[in-house]
Length: 65
Image (cartoon, helix red, strand yellow):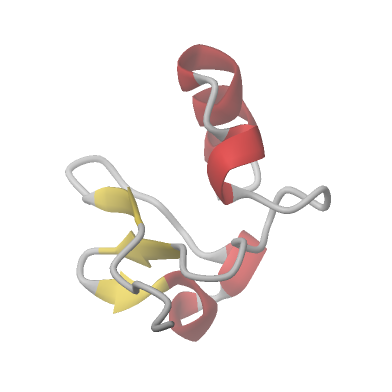
């Protein structure tokens, strides 16, 4: 993940939408998922990403007013 996230941010301009300044945590209501498991539960920045893994940046939560 340490190599993948900065590359994604450069290629797709998502850093300001989903990632905090440290680059390895998501803003409120955003989640990073690797193969269906939350990023924080599979190693955070040190999580391995192998060929064929599915990495998803998503916003599944909606704030209630």
